[in-house]
Length: 71
Image 1: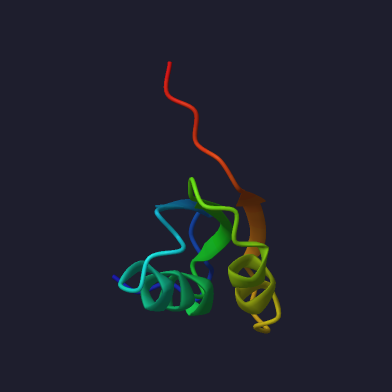
Image 2: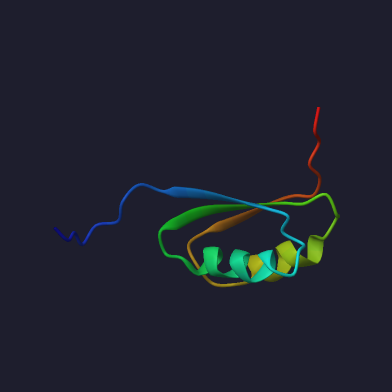
């Protein structure tokens, strides 16, 4: 069955967002119309990556988290 209404909001987390393989993945996640929130995590402080992805005109809001702490 197909529906014309969108499903529930999807929140996506991308770990290692400064990596060369993960950057295109983050771009694809940002372009996905089903995603409403995109959180980018990395241990390297890369505010440029978050800024680049957030300028793409789509529904998903980008949330930068520059550091991961493991306890």
